[in-house]
Length: 183
Ligand SMILES: Cc1cc2nc3c(=O)[nH]c(=O)nc-3n(C[C@H](O)[C@H](O)[C@H](O)COP(=O)(O)O)c2cc1C
Image 1 (cartoon, rainbow, N blue to C red):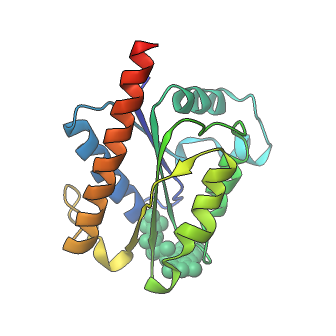
Image 2: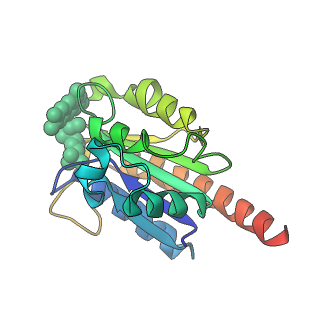
């Protein structure tokens, strides 16, 4: 079990969203947290399209999230919202799977015009799973350099916003961890 689960909703093989999420995960590991990554690409599409609620991969993902203190959900913007495949996957998870978790939403998009996709699409989706999201961070694709895997975020302002959000996120995860240990 990990304290943090990072879920990517990008179906791209060479994904900017995944680079940002990996970067965030490394920062959290550096803070001493244990982190697991899951991508929509890791879940057999047959399970998703055939609504196999009880498939081993979906059960495993559910247990992973239920055992974590915090969840980061990242998605590229597709047609002004999160990806369809992320929605199709989340449709198969328990309705309250994000209850009591620290939740950090992250989106990447091609244009600044869809900055509010995080407010109007991803946060309501996470709220439907009983997740109370932090503010979150939206990246424009031009702020992510795919050739720099270790430090892919090339815009200082958005990098500072991510670091601040990760700080709040790790604080909440640590509080929840302390509470879980006491009880
Ligand atoms: C099918 C598709 C639809 C997209 N729709 C939008 C959109 O509506 N608004 C936007 O800002 N970017 C849009 N984009 C651009 C992606 O959001 C952007 O390139 C993102 O960083 C890709 O992330 P990824 O590399 O993790 O897949 C779209 C890209 C694709 C492939």
